[in-house]
Length: 224
Image (cartoon, rainbow, N blue to C red; front, side, top):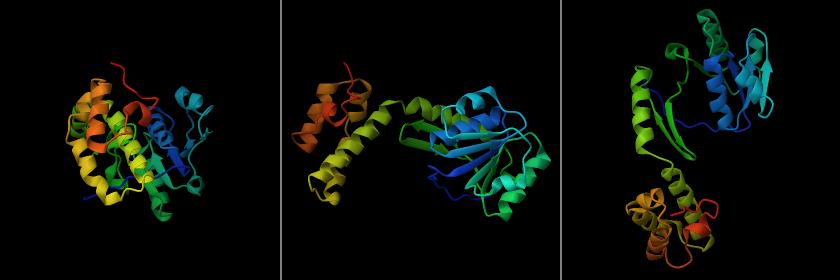
């Protein structure tokens, strides 16, 4: 199977998770991180889900799944240990042209979930097309060590610089060599080591006056 890679915008979209155990809870947490509106249907609901429902856009229905639960849903995740039920969810979703993932059953999914390395807005996904979740997990752990929180700071900084450049009526095409200089410099090391003055010196050299880390990201200024 060859999958078409895509990152979905599920903000404020209705998503259904069938299954309220450990696997279902993890699926719900990831959906909520992406600002989805989530409904969980399951006779048993974990204590973590009960706690989340007090502060998150999460609806809990403590009962067995019904085909009608798919009405109005953008996507559904089956996270039960009942093989017959999981396949029923898949058939119902297919009939409604609804995005469907069944945990650990790629043959009855129309999309699969990759392993994820998340550093705020930086999202790195790893997929083995369902052939080896264990290898995907190993690669994820390797990348987690390689890409630390400094990459989230770098991405926020680049976004702030881009907004400032656009506000100054720079032509977008002129930004490319500037960003390439920054990316190819030792900026990521300076951010990781909290070298504020060195960061500011680099920004000034590449971008000119008026670009200081503490002004661009006032709440994220590193402390030496």
